[in-house]
Image 1 (cartoon, protein in one colour):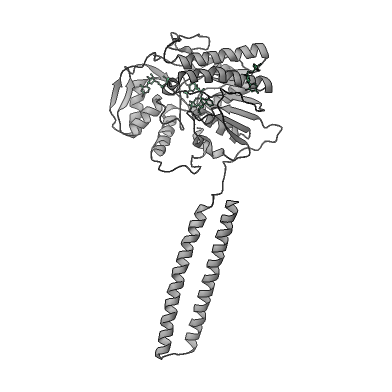
Image 2 (image 1 turned 90 degrees about the vertical axis):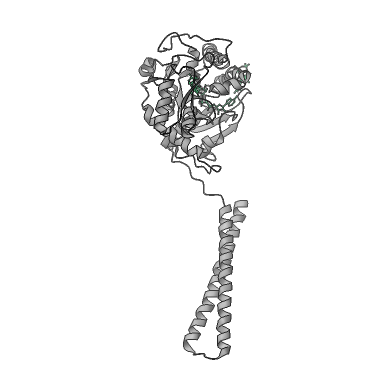
Length: 419
Ligand code: NAD
Ligand code: UDP
Ligand code: UDP
């Protein structure tokens, strides 16, 4: 309604402007005609032409005023909403897909992938670590629905597939409220499995390499049971995810729920939370801001980093497969945190100092996925080289740090991030 009256107002202002302008200019043209026919020399006529000039100036002033008013009114109109091009599917092969935690880092890229592929996507998120900005490119689209909801509470929806990603993922975030982290991964997972059971939906649980704890087996295959401190600072997350896996297989055994379990290894890319304290976002932002790069402990501990679009394609492949046992999804290229710090500093090009801070408690010392199973069962392996993925990530954070206004659906073309 506001939009309509706004448009009406602009149209009427425009008509007044056009009418006024045509009257003034025709009057002026008439006068010029007369002037050319009659040679006027006396003072009376001089005065008249002076008067005409004044009127013309006055008219030009008024036109300027009306033009600026028109521009102001036009700026109030909502810009026409456009969406990225997506595949068209009829109701016969379009799925209804729920993504819990879909406003988060990984979830939002999965939303892009499934939306571009023409499915109906429901996102459920409590915005603890996610943000509306991550999925704003789809708000209002007929295939997209965003529900602000906490999965610790029951949820009733009719869906075909569930990607269950809701859970804080960075150590500072999951340690911030450990009890809530446990509830989200246990009670929240029970609710999502209950939903899958009732709707007969397939459900994929986003588990983690943290189920291996500080591993004594290297690299880690899915058959390894792990080495987790059950009462340490990471336990709320590690044990929460281990229970989530146990729940998935209990629902599978007892109620026939069709489950998939992805053990996700360290992932990075655009839309990581700038303040989540994970190593990639920390190092990139520190390097961009020319601040010291903070290594916790000796920096000899290792991680293996995968770019987010590799993870997304792995998750989609796992959901589509018939394989129900846990699958590692990660990039086996392993680097020490020291090497990683230098790599990021050199890529950003700053001259940040690299400093060592005290080590964090229970920090896993080595981590690298054995992806034999993913290759065999899903025909999947990561494709994005570290340098390429990091360059995209640096570019994203550079843009984010220079942002000075709220977004106007300016999050970029989603396909641009899916390397
Ligand atoms: P993220 O923090 O960016 O996203 C998690 C999302 O879940 C956020 O949008 C958050 O608001 C939402 N959420 C949290 N608690 C919720 C609740 N109770 N109800 C509804 N929504 C809730 O993290 P991410 O990196 O995108 O991780 C996604 C999933 O992948 C998580 O389950 C995480 O454990 C798993 N994972 C991620 C990584 C990684 O490196 N990114 C590694 C291993 C596992
Ligand atoms: N649940 C839900 N949505 C549904 C179905 C179930 O949130 O569509 C929740 C429900 O509130 C219950 C949980 O999932 O607490 C587990 O469901 P289940 O059927 O296993 O348990 P029951 O309802 O028999 O306790
Ligand atoms: N780390 C670091 N400096 C930071 C952030 C993290 O040295 O500013 C280290 C951290 O101690 C760990 C590794 O980087 O050894 C990965 O940490 P992150 O929090 O990204 O993920 P994790 O694999 O520990 O869950």
